[in-house]
Amino acid sequence: MKNILIKFTNLILVVILLASCSEDYLDVNVDPNNPSTVSPDLILPTAMKYTADVIQGSRRANTLGNLMMYNWSQADGYSWYTNEFNYLVNTSFYRGIFNDSYSEPLTQYQILENLEDEEYVYYVAIAKIMQSYHFQLLVDFYGDVPYFEALQRGAEATPAYDDAQEIYDDLIIELTSAIDLIDNAVETAIVPGNDDIIFGGEMHDWKAFANTIKMRILTRQIDMTGRTAYIQDEVNAIIAEGSGFITGDVGVNPGYLQEEGKQNPTWNTYGWDVGGTAAMDNDATCASDYIITYLQGLNDPRIDYIYEQPATGHLGVPQGLLAHEYDNPVVDAYVADLVSNIGPGILKSPNMDAIIFTLAESYFNQAEAALTITGLGNAQTLYENGIQASFDCLGAPGAATYISQPVGFVAWGIGGISNKELIITQKWIAMNGITAEQSWFDYSRTGYPRNLPISRQASTTDRPVRIYWPSGEVSANGGNLPDQPDAFTAKIFWAL
Image 1 (cartoon, rainbow, N blue to C red):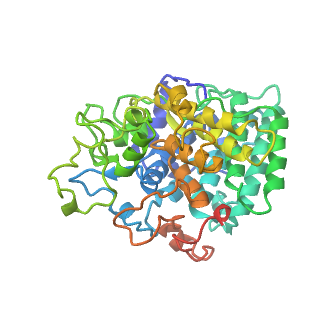
Image 2 (image 1 turned 60 degrees about the vertical axis):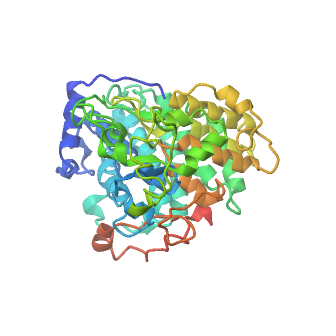
Image 3 (image 1 turned 120 degrees about the vertical axis):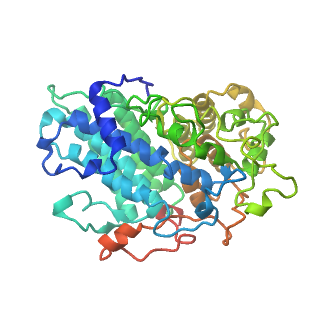
């Protein structure tokens, strides 16, 4: 994306203050089936701000991904991640991913999608793209979810649960429709401006993002039997459309500031408050021992950007240590001042963009697909572009030197490591701390990175492969809710 720094205008200020000061903000009497009562330029930035919160907010997608993928652990003196380390998946576990997705961004995007005035066609197209973004995430976390009957409010208060693969297929159709709307917009169509806090109204960028989401959807299915021809056809359509893929990290920024209630959500949770005092999560959250050793073994300079380096050197903590184990054999070895907390490449500033899709992931998705699908280019080049994009995202130097070293899990074509495993492993490193849920989905699908440890508190042989539909759905929509699947064995359809 173009890194647009949008001034905190009075209009946006009002929207964000409303959104940050009241969890009931979306309970106002705005009928998605009566969009004429709302102003699109107010709804759009609010929806996008909510998108950022679903990914980067406390106990949301990125947090869960980092803990599931052994990127993060816990410093001595804290009991922050007990449920995560025990893999205690129940109907309360990370329920905000489901509840907030539907009640906040998806509801707002639905209001925009229902706009009938052709002058708002660009808003409709953006809404379709962002709804597709969210619904794919919901499928990847939960499998079957309400889709075709969802978001209709009074029209369907208890929507049916739809087949996950049918949703995936329809998302491709919706994304194609969004591109068509942009291409065929009337001359009088209103082009979003500062209210588009992702791309600043650059509609070509929105088409490229739609294609990039398509590629994520298609790559997720790349190992499925009988899907190769479908994926090839859809890739051919993307290439023929001509807008390509994103050319930078995609981030949301409503005008984050170092002021109370206005900081970037990642910084606000894992960084420092407006007075410079470290958040509790900042001290509590640190690297695992495994990831520190892994990055050091690859001579990976990103280690100093993904993780803070204490004066005594990098130190990670085994995931799931019990209280009495922290001081054995060395007392206070794992206190917050001595461990590697979240680093400066992740926590850049309180006004940094909230990243929702990285350029690195886009390249890695293309690289994996290019192993079996034609037309995308050279898989090695795409893979190396992914590493470069990861370095750039973190602000780390030395990508070319890193790529050129003859080290397994870095250099292309090293014996004993398949190209697919190489791509997925480097993608895991690149997603660390940013959009780590994507690595969890990849692990469920491929088993890579290989030999990834599990928490010492786990009573299972591996990490979960999904999370449960939340308790609110059980009580409010129980008649449509399928039986809860086994969180450790019932994989999402693309991983079967």
